[in-house]
Image (spheres, rainbow, N blue to C red):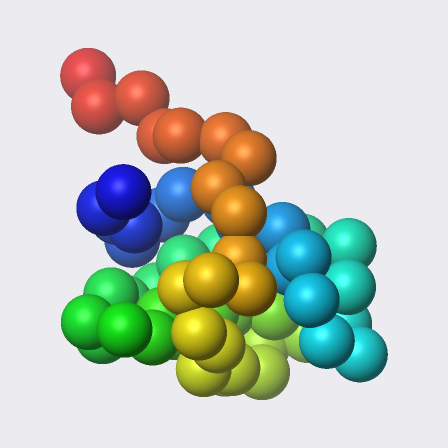
Length: 57
């Protein structure tokens, strides 16, 4: 599945399990995530699940 910037995602593995992030960039196998406090994370796509898609109007 394509992970488009702006979508909301939930971490399904790791120390940050069940935390919500905003996708900032798709890096192939990895995805760049923006945390609530402004921190940028890089996680494997297998460890992230999209929970809300952004409407494009």
